[in-house]
Image (cartoon, rainbow, N blue to C red; front, side, top):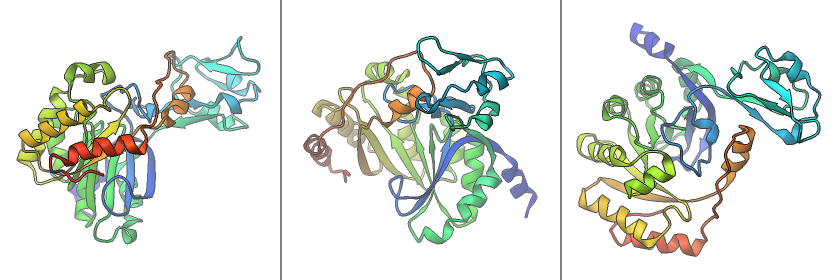
Length: 311
């Protein structure tokens, strides 16, 4: 092993999952590496535990039997009993350091830690273990959260995968400086690029940031790299599910000559709400509904009218 490989393998990042044999995040069979951290705060986020860049405590109140062992053991004195629910506890998130001591002792596994520090070498070795199943199309997809939340980690992992003969992909919201994104794209074959809303004011309202950087970066990718670009649009009623929203997306992609090989429309699901409760947030959840097949097909046909392959 070269000194450079040793250096790359030693780089660390925070991940919260590695999924094997995935078929929906890029072509073929893929291994998905979920990086923890995201610059956006989408109100519909399916993985709210992915937003913070550090490990976090998850708490399933329905599994808690109120034994109190976590209260006794917590070194930060962050856990206390709730007064509104019998045999339930609550955690002061400003005190909790996600040390994991309470999760180790919990008899019902009501408490767990989302996220861990991992080395590039550790993750690369696990990805390489799946190489036999990738065939000519599959490979690794780094997603999140945001794949570029830990850019040195992601870039080093993709570089080793490239050198190991594995096709690479990143899924990104694009809300990072180009100077952060560009070095990672040198080792990226496929970019799964999320576009959530074309109107910047509405994008700000729904995600916490405007979309100027996102759209600018997509143009840079199209003009300055050879990456295959797949645009992904989560369809979230009532945030971006109108014909006008789809026409705005179609016009931008065609007028700016974006090299987009396909557009994936992703219907909303509410799986993130249960995770939001596990983080014990002080904010209300997001209410929406899954678009019908007919509604999705109507939006698909609009984008097909601009000449795109739409799935």
